[in-house]
Length: 362
Image 1 (cartoon, rainbow, N blue to C red):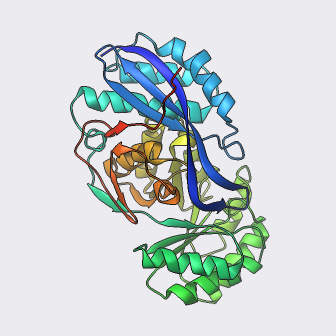
Image 2: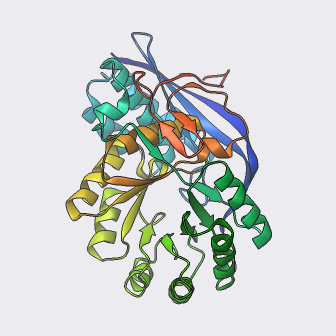
């Protein structure tokens, strides 16, 4: 199975409600999509969201990286030469992790189709389904409480609460949500780099003192402030999850060895795709550290690839793959079945999607 072409397109899907974090507000999923065409006529699909505030990638930079650098280097390669393809993919241009991720997942889609198996089985086959959390955007407290109750009514028992804008005022947000949803719903707190190290310790300690029973706190401090995150992790009982601080296997090793976090959040758009994400899984497993699989604002296309990785590796014990649930429409055919909190794998070869809502490929 030889790579004959790599094509780029765009998709735009409205969100059910604005997505708000300490870093940005978004109302649409406007992403680059990729189609890798083999000489057999088989096609693999991938997707990249332009998340400039986190990865530095824009729609223009993603499309350019694929067309001008990645495509010329991969055309003519055999899909079975997965290791060789990935070496070229990651050496032909520095950074540009979202562009690499889109092509990587399309290649893995083709590779699994070549062997006639669903991708998750080829990645390890650890499970066939999992439960994901859903994000509660940062808003006035009464609105966040209403959104949390709505999510629980739809079957979600894990909520990821966005905070990071109001310092110690964020404790009141979490307290109000905990009181509303009761003790049986798991709460994850995501500060999106919004606090200083000292603020983080004060805020997390306050939540602990009030017995708010927080499962974890994600990326409380700036991504580059590894010493600051180590300061926080060593001074609170609540587990700290490293997100924006971890793009590569080397980052994961550094974070783990320095005791800067208790958990690692893997996102394909940070790692540059499944190939590097698997290496982070291996690192985490060696050190006995559990991982979460997360996503940016992505559609079902790339979230499905992440779902396959989640079901492939047992070291991934938590999922934050709510992208499809945040969209107001689902124009895709096939792939994993997203039923609110429950995600179940299909047995279709590859990632499993058979129809992509993109009319113009180039």
